[in-house]
Amino acid sequence: MSVLTPADAGTGAVAEGGHGRLYWLLADCANVVRRGMTHYRRRPVNIAWQLGFPILSVLLYGYVFGSAMRVPGGGDYLDFLMPGMFVMSMAFGFVNTATLVVHDSTKGVIDRFRSMPMASSAVVAGRGMTDLLVACAELAIMMLTGLAMGWRPEGGWGFLGAFGLLLWLRFALIWLGVWLGLLVPNPEAAGGLFAVAFPLTMISSIFVAPQLMPDWLGRLAAWNPLSSTAAATRDLFGTPVAGADDWIGGHALLMAWVWPAVLTAVFLPLAVRRFQRLGR
Image 1 (cartoon, rainbow, N blue to C red):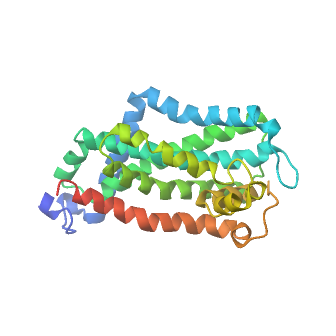
Image 2: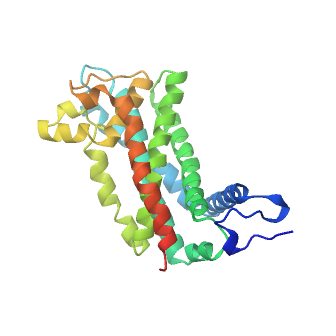
Image 3: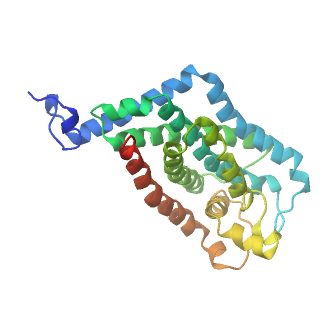
């Protein structure tokens, strides 16, 4: 009977009970997810803020600014706004990820994980799965808020496809948040990442169609990855908007899959590598 040791963790050795490397990778990931969800349960203020902010945002932009906004080709601004608000919530999520990671890093939790016979990828993946579960709750609450305000999306496969695209974007940005959380020195610095997230969301099609912006700014907004997801989800929810006659606008659904894939391919390896190199 063999026992898994730190030296065996990355070799695929068979551990007690005949379990191999894949089993322990999934078990470690599940333990990290359980730890993350337990922290949310024990700190209700944190989850209340993270889930309450999207509600306040929908109410603010929908009721305060909605009457002054114009939609290309006509239509209700709430139908235009809601998919954009979902995208904004997914985009801001990377700041929350970075903040939680840097908290663990400064309190020595990351060092403890590294001292255990755990796969580095399991720690990073566990953080990602926790954030995806929270993202699902955020989307559900925002959708209920939108329905209460009169938003009526199409159902069926289009609705499920839009939900999947939003989680795909969040999945990609999780790795950016993990990587940044392992880079920044303290939680205060992580909070400053909102200075990056805010212009990223404003210079996009989340709140205003790019064709209503100045030409140079509209082109910049159209090539923002968030704009592709916003445009694709509007189509899938059954509220398409008359767009500009350019390539990026005509291939929003394609780019809504491509942009997150590129972000994942870049930042997931960077996050795992950064975790492995901590303390060296």
